[in-house]
Image (tube, rainbow, N blue to C red; front, side, top):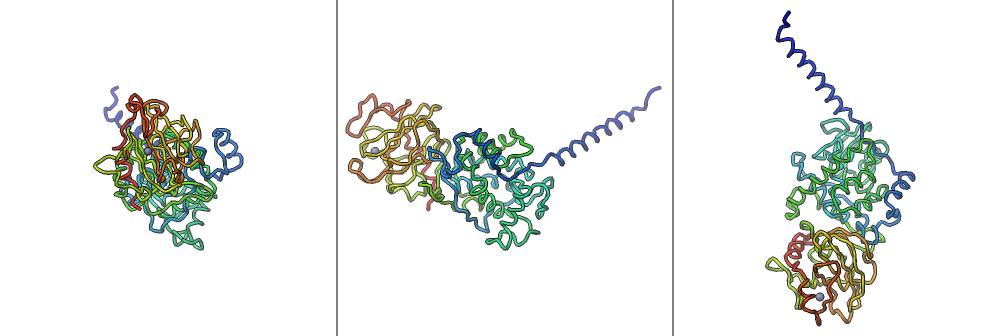
Length: 434
Ligand SMILES: [Zn+2]
């Protein structure tokens, strides 16, 4: 007997429906990301994995670290922008983290990539309960908010942002959380109970490594999905680069909370790191830290009369000096001021960047690895040999700086120096004005 033809598609359709239902169920009941409080055991595990981590060092490692905890203040009007602009929201959160914690774009991409992997997904809704697709007040079961905080951390989050806490970012516990509430709590955790996180991601130099470090230090997720976190971090990093040269042009987020160096850190006010591509402006702060801004004009920078390619940027003593390119410290010595000279070699481009006339104290150590924008020292005090305090920066081919001074620079050595005028000009442009 021949079976009626219509029966087969009907059965097939039934099977497809079952597969669909199972798939959808799996998506909805995917194991929750579980955040839990940082325990002594976690700390020990972490230090075994990352021996450089010192829980008492809030200024990062000898290489300058992440700039220390930022100011806790978050404006009540802090917003990443409309939920419909997911790219803008992601990039704005990156900018806020860069500004507040003196992170490079690569480092700031890690936390954002993690939050994209949490239940809220790519537009980082501030008021989403785990497994739901619309915003709501916190239910205190499962995760809630950007990081899908659970358990005691979720309770502390909501207590921190509702009355009698002041400022109260939400009028009551039955309100929807907003971006300001999420960012205020995120900063509270990053500055206090989870401050290991900033140290951890400050040691990384790629969005992927930062995503993994952030998961290990902060999320400690039940469902790690590391590949998703890494892919997300790379995505938002690229989105930032697409928008990175037009600072301040996206949304209302990012700049709403202003950072300042943490207590006990000799360093940066972390108000500005000018990054364009792989280059960072070698001083940290606003445009105002440069006391000879006229050196930047016509798309390049003035060489200030050196007989080889080099640049003198005038700044007050103590102004934090940032790595212009990432790399490894290959030389730490004393220059004529006397001041500290540090050379940092970037293997990828086979270039060595040298920073001269710095303070003798608090510099990156020989052998340290630094990323562009990371603090490596600070401008030294006035001294006979070098006149007005300034940072001298030059870039040459090879691992170490060719011997060259204003008074004496052999032609063969002079030929090794490379013109970074255009990169200095561009990175200066993206520093905040004030
Ligand atoms: Zn000079």
